[in-house]
Length: 347
Image 1 (cartoon, rainbow, N blue to C red):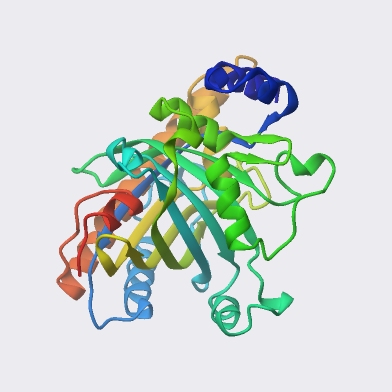
Image 2 (cartoon, one colour):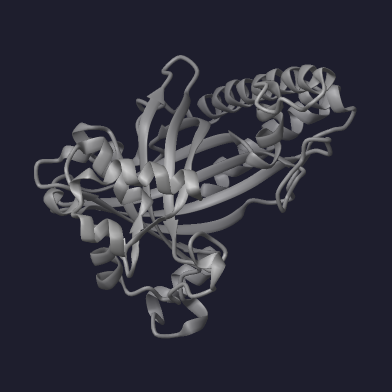
């Protein structure tokens, strides 16, 4: 936390001294996301049509022992029995002169529901506590790097989560409760502050753009509803960490509906395949020699494991893309962030 606070003070040159004195910088520190992305349009198809094809391809790869990482740990991947549903309602903010879009960054207020059924019922019964959203957070993403050859995208992501399990509320359990009224929490995102906290995502946004968040005069430019269907590849291995140490890959299928003030409404599908943090955290740390106290043998086998995981990511990308093109005759869209895509795509 001391490091985060030090970084924050370096970024606060645009804030008055009283703001620094009276408020505390807080949020989840930046992490790097690395994942395969492919977006496409597919009219007249259901999510289950696509998810079934993905499932068939992955199970075939497992049965033919095509993956590399299982050979290192002498285990086999196990696919979750079904795709689990989530729903996100995102409000992307930008300045009147589109500075965020021009700088290829994203700043959004996000609500999350733990199931599709819960979200659908909230649309009818928004006053019933049982159907309230499960999470609310402000997120900032920057440093997008898209490889058009591999489909791999990397981005730096920072967030401020309004829940007791996350900074800064995990210290005293006083996070605001659902349903996190939209008008109030949009105002919080626009101000970059919550009570006596300066939110790390807004500070990172200021650093990137070179203006204070109040100078940016942020307004909602795109409203997006993402029906997400997610499954995991699991495997027993010695590097596992976190609450789900055997989850090694996340395979996500997003059904995205959006509307914005300039382009109207649209829809697209997006597939994401990512090495899970539960597996990658320790493997990547050891292979990058970040842990000086670890034995040389541990660093060497971790490097081999990292290479194997990345090979499996490439294999999943290649085979799933090929299968979808064959089954549905789709043409992948140019690789962009969701926000950039909604500002340029028409149905």
